[in-house]
Image (cartoon, rainbow, N blue to C red; front, side, top):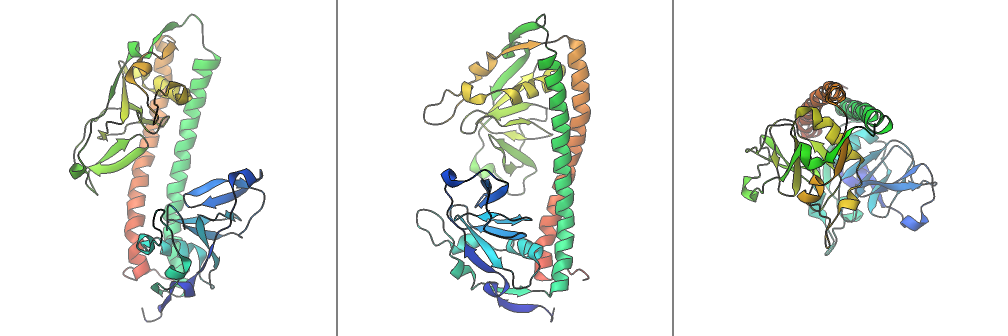
Length: 345
């Protein structure tokens, strides 16, 4: 590694504070406005040419975001205004190896000062090796992105079929009832913080999706989940062994043929109309059970469910691949950045 260069982060990339842009001043356009958590809106003017990188400056500090095209760098981020000739994609991955939380200069709100991080000592490979490292990691991210897009397409096709069969072609003669007539509605169970395990075997599902890992599981069934308190409207079908937290409502259809019709029914609901919370959003089991439904005969349900099962089996396979590729990328990244694993330039 004698050809690797020791310097400071500011010698590698020069960071600049972003620019003020209140929501009321955003003009309709196609230019993404880059905030500390990612895109927060769109504007008609860019402050920064792509490709570019931001890291959170205020609130959510330090998380790197990569932008292929021009963007507006919001004042909640630091953006790189000069890459000093280094490979932009390599720098994006390189920044993932830093714990910027240790440079928090804020009191009430976490804040990152560019002058502080410019002084961080770093060791950097030559440009050809930077490009080779970035190519390896990008190939994994590209595959992960492709699988995510495939899953979105598969879900969209199933949702379009549901809308055709259950909305456009709905028949007034179909049997009417309430959700509680065809499904059990309950809640998950609380889990002690001591039972959270960083690399646990099973995901813990909260109102927003996975919130941690544990070595215990609550169910191994396909169930429909939605947030009970806090976050409303996120609809999930469980995959394999999971623990379901007590801020989640569980919907278990009495018959398998009803799983996917109920799932897409829930995705079409306006959950704000079901919100009965005062200080924070809340949905009750009773209100879910009383949702009025109108379902067709079993032949239509079975046919729809069969097509959905085929699509979701593919989605499950893709999810497993995404997890494998993500673990491989996360394992390789620090090894490539430290020179422990080398790639031929």
